[in-house]
Image 1 (spheres, rainbow, N blue to C red):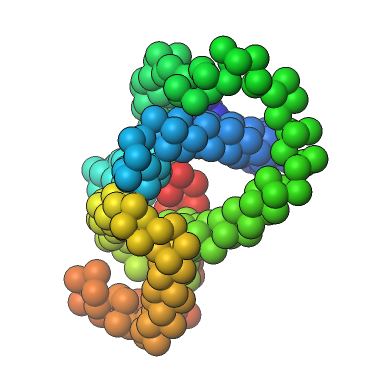
Image 2 (cartoon, rainbow, N blue to C red):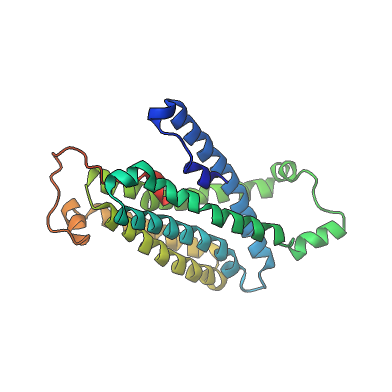
Length: 263
């Protein structure tokens, strides 16, 4: 329920220091909820997947992440295009968060109708289900090792997503002074491409294994970072279709997207 509440946050002018404090509290709550629901969704998908297709089934929850990013940035691109800068910064950015309440309701409905996996049901019938799963996870050396390795592996993917899906929007609009709508649309199309590639990667896991697929992805990410570092800001500006690069000595433009737009 955190995303819709972002649209109800007070401004610093009306609430003072409580405005950023409330924003921080909601982001922490969103992160905790996302971590639990995302992990549970992946587990349900993989355990429901048939033999030989578990990688593809495990990729389905990740598609939701890509489509959610596309919906968010697409909505902000539409609002910034139809509203003036003053209207967008005043109330327009709140609209996208409030509209997301419909997706929250849909997600709750799907979650309540999800059945437990056959593997878990079998454990329950045998009365072998753990009453304190966290304690069992930390006690078993093999499970503990796999958990730590999984957490470490997630850092690379997490850094990639937050760099290109969150930080890039603020950097491109605030530092490079690129047009806000063009940047948001670029991220939207990239997110749609990511949804397709996630499905292909899931299928690749079934054919070549998770380790080789993930290692290849991280290597390609490193190559993309190097290639991007070679691009000049002027080249990025011309890629948006604008006539000339901005004057970086000018006062900061109001044409910037909130960092939370990517979420």
